[in-house]
Length: 177
Image (cartoon, rainbow, N blue to C red; front, side, top):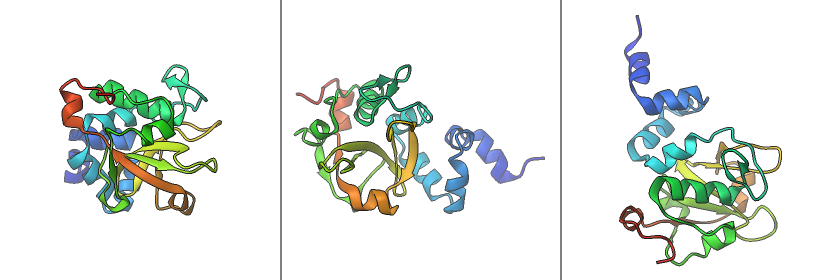
């Protein structure tokens, strides 16, 4: 017989998804904070992004079949889940006037997070998923994964965040309008 917690996990598709991808153990280890935030505030975009965990990094890549680079990944997720077409490069995404600047302490799931990984501001981008974590396509030899922005490497390289107006995106407007 299943415990109430185990039964709830099997009944909840977000919990099941996180468990299948090895993320639930992290969430349980943090008093289910990540799980609850993803479940409570998750958009189709964040859940869509989670479906690509493990897809390999490919420089210039923008599909699951060929692999993704960081900006190809964010562009694909935004376009396929909310219909918002982002520019191709991370620095162009960061400079897009239709995206709102967001303070680190005000991040919400679905926000774009930017880092200086190549001695250039806004040289890397990912999607915030909650509890200080983001999903991204990291580098050659890597694959789409979730990492903690509070780790020293990411914390010192964080250069900003942007939020899309998903209400307008849902009404069929693109980022260029």
